[in-house]
Image 1: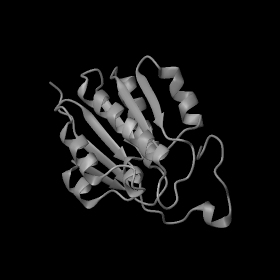
Image 2: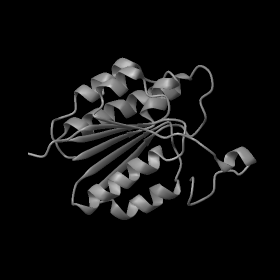
Image 3: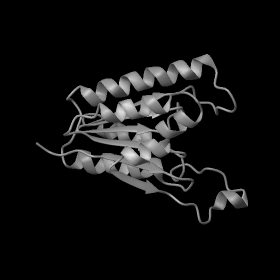
Length: 172
């Protein structure tokens, strides 16, 4: 039996989702089954179009309403996140997937959509052979402590600071 680990990709720098999707492609290339659940997001980004080519090995589901959450989230945002957490839990424990990615899980926590206890319980439910990835800025310290691998993306310099918006195929 293969040993799985828990990864956390966090920090203010660019590349957390991109790193997780790169791992998904690597896993699919090795014949593994992948489930990606995206909190907050709800749009057909370029990566979603590309991953559609691997639909026999990679399942991607979005659990957001496609809007920024500022301040207190509305009931619909909380319900979407709760549904997402349940779907991710089901995928994690189903035995059908080798790699499960909870994209923007840390942001969902930071916005008040899910709790730290939700994240820790989700991590604790990981079967030994499943690889688990949680992405997003602001990973709680308890999540970082419990993970096997933590990568912090550090922003040193970014062209957003010069007014360059997200570009198709690069940031979206």
